[in-house]
Image 1: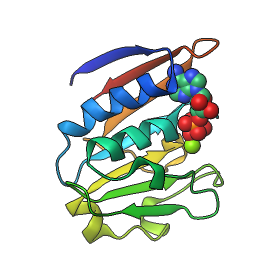
Image 2: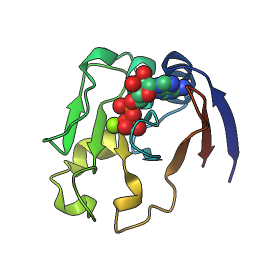
Image 3: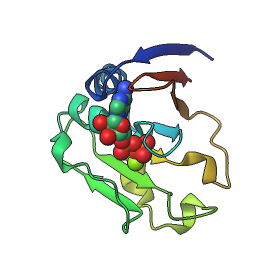
Length: 139
Ligand code: ADP
Ligand code: MG
């Protein structure tokens, strides 16, 4: 178990942290993102996309769609946003498990998942006031 802590002072810095993390990702990795609305979870996922050579502008907040898939990068990126659910089971939200095994899954509002993932990468983003964010990554 290792823990890394970063301080970000802008959306760009949050993305840059995620770009670095993306460089180490391998097929089947799951990232569980938590943090309040506006913390920067989607910004972080844009950085993951960028680091995987996927166009970060393709990454939107999947407000009505729970799952978005982005291909064409080093690994497929599966972006899940559970904001609209109280409680969610990854098995029930239409996640393509074959694709998930080949790619990287990033889950926003991961605290709403009913099942814990033993070897997930846990990303906690907390608002420190203004544009300042603390990013804590445990794996
Ligand atoms: P979430 O997905 O957690 O709800 P978003 O990534 O959609 O959050 O939005 C974060 C908002 O906060 C954006 O409007 C972004 O410009 C702003 N912001 C300000 N400072 C930061 C920072 N340090 N990191 C990330 N986003 C920031
Ligand atoms: Mg979001």
